[in-house]
Amino acid sequence: MVIVEGGKMNKIEVSMKKDEIFHLATFLILFLVISCKTFHAPPQYLPTAKQAQSDVYGGWIEVKTNKGNINGELIAIQEKRVFVADLRTLHEIDLEDIISARLVTYNPESSKVFLQTAEGIVFTLLLAGIPAMILSTGEESFEVFLWLLVSPVVAAIWTTPIWVTVGTGAAIYQSNLPIIDYPKKPIDAFIPFARFPQGIPPDVDKNSIRMKIPKKEMK
Amino acid sequence: MRLRNILLIILTIFMIGCTFYQLKREINLPGTFQKMTQPQLDEKKTKSPFLKVHMKNGNLYLFDSWKIDEAKSAIVGNATLFSPTREVISKGQATVSLDGVALIETNFLKPSPASTALKIVSAISAVILTLLFISLPGE
Image (cartoon, rainbow over all chains, first blue to last red; front, side, top):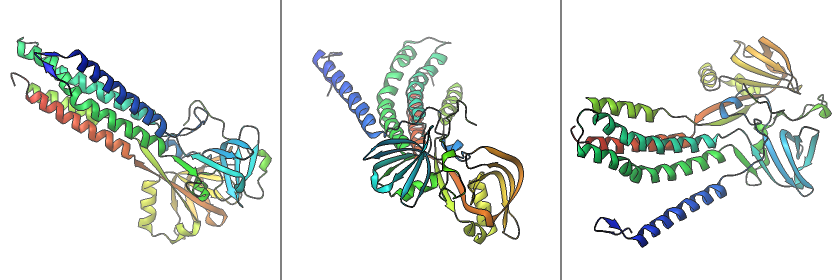
């Protein structure tokens, strides 16, 4: 609670307000870091949701086994084995050796959600001041000048907390959308995102299969 | 009048925002496609402009325009054919018999709820700004 006495805010109360804001910001950042699922796909590997419609490769998979971790392109899941290709070889992993696995099906572009949130905050504050600036070009008045100063503050108080809260939630939601975790979900849920959802055909030379090479510019 | 114009500009700016998508992928057996009625196929075509046809030999046809022929025995359209190692084999008009098809993949894009949430916040901001402008002196 902020107490205003004679137009001046008590110094202790101001300090408390700053602390509250700092704690809230720290909480939101921590919440964001904890809630967003991480993955280590090479840059440009993952197509966006739009590009994934015509992408001809498997999703990015990170497998934790009792013999070590394997990351790469999901090639197939068949006969209780998961096939993962990296740049050097094709790994064949028994399902019973897998402790956990994470599949990322496309690039969620959650950074764009952050960007749009930041844009929303800045735009709101700028736009709150612009009309007064335009209207004050003809006849200057103290009221218009005061309005010019006060309106961005009022807009900030009313809109910034909504933008930050909803924007953070939206970014977390968006970042988790393309992720499927095993054993939380059955391994069969990964199959549609494999290069060969039908399994590796017997005529295909397994030694020739390598993961998709990330391109700087994807079509 | 000036205020109305300003409001229109502001609302327009707020309505311009990125739309974020989520992808829904469906894998169908060729038989499922054969059983579909024409309206069902048309709906799939509208929702999924690309069609991925996984062949039994590991090749993949990526159709950017497609239809099922009248006998419902083949997929016809413009496609790129990829090898199992995903090298391009050919491009152009293709007719793929359903006999050699292992699976048919469709991908649908849906606007993400994250987009909707940000659009709602944009609208709330626009309303708050509108209320502020109504209180503007001289209007």
